[in-house]
Length: 461
Figure 1: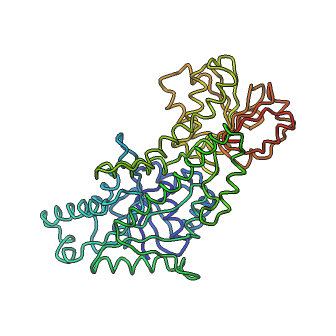
Figure 2 (figure 1 turned 90 degrees about the vertical axis):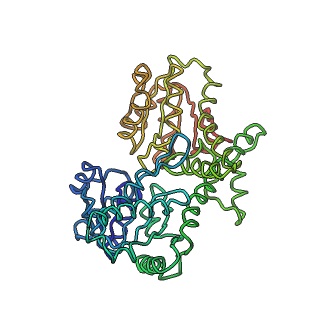
Figure 3 (figure 1 turned 120 degrees about the horizontal axis):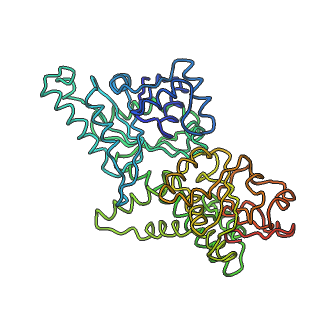
């Protein structure tokens, strides 16, 4: 099947590469020519496990290509996935300018029936706006006498599909190739049925052992994506609230997590206490759902609380550090292990490390940071965060290795739960630190580390 993917971010690159791996003929488009040139040269602009090998293999076989030519991309695909960004607006709403621009580009260049698939996370009702954007361009072409937008397209111009992604950064390729469910929302009538049949054929390789496809209306599919992310974010904030209480009543939250998670109605996923959620999805999707409710005169009180709890949780470790050393941290040096918002990615969007590092620097501390993958992205993002405070940026340094970061530091601050941090040489760590003090924002270690002489401060433990 001929597939086009508009957008080469996490979702677009993974979607295009995985569909090519299944034997489809895929072209990925991006307006960023530098990114397209990088991809054509064999580079990969993001860190995602298994993705470079997947891209290399399918480019070599000719099943995957990249272009900055919108007309070529639209002409190529019988099915066109829109996988562009939907960043949050100032009011919390999802910014749809890139989605609608992609739609207008499709309308400007399409020459036959197309199945247009929303892969980006978009608010309920976006498909209607997307259809209007495409048809507006088609109408303009007809009025200009463009025969390619003639009578055939008037009868059956396109079908809109919502096919939300449920990919975890760091495991996106595996999630795509081994999905637990495939949600497909289609319109009513002949175009919708045709699109449903085409999407069923496209995803048939995933349904050989059992049927994983869930069919529904377009709006329901759009809603399902937001509902899923909002539920997962709720679990994280709920557990963090309990962790903060557990500290006050003298309970180890990890024991509680195991007891609660053993209930099959609840399960263990997304019940880990820590510094809250970050990344490109949960923060903006929770806010977008709250905004959608507000436009319909409703308050989503639970989700409003989820967001507030998450923002407060990013400060928890800072508060613990201040309680230990005082508000004035001048002359103190802190080693930071972990910068990305989660392990196995270099994504710094909404990363708690950005909040913690700025708070430490603002109080006069020196920070030496290390991350196995996100160093380059962290340098860029933190330089932007601190562009107005050169005095703070001058006290932020980067180490080439974990043990280099902790050398002569007053304490180790753990902000991302990378596997590489889970089993250090504790004797070497103790010798490198000015004092054996660890502030663990991800509960990497067991409290009995205190028996080895460490002053161990975690979350809810």
